[in-house]
Length: 198
Image (tube, rainbow, N blue to C red; front, side, top):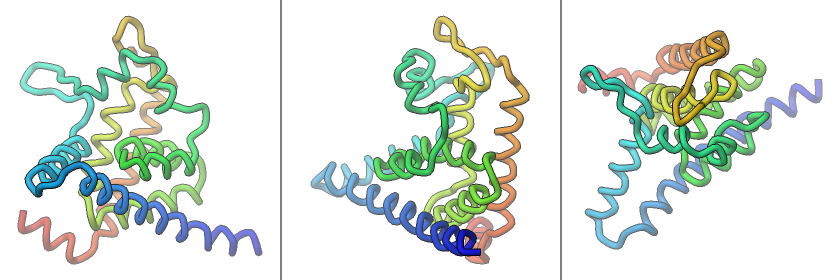
């Protein structure tokens, strides 16, 4: 009984910490980078564009790979920071603190599959973030940036990714779909109203 109560208190506190840390980090990053408003706006727009841009996408008949995906394909040491032996909330919180939300979301996708307590914590965190960001786009961006170079899913040889465990990819894709389902299910009336305007 006491354990359940303690866990019940830890989850909301961690969610609040993650959200405050992300917003604080975002604010500090934009404040410290530039003196004039136009530079701050440019930085913010670039940051948001990166958050929503998938690492791998199709344009016309061409496969487009952004800088993050290219770095993942070519730097083994960098891949080891994104794909740890075990995904932890502490590491996700550290990414948020450093304003690397897309990486934190990749950790959320992986943490979601571990147990029901993690599922609840991930969904609550996403619902809070959804008030500030388009979390459906950010989640999909994260998945299509980090899944194709995930060593649990495939291997990389000579800068090319090869999927060797499609069942693992499907499991992570199913987590993404579930997270998107809950984001849609628990949208506030205000969010629905704003979507209809756009």
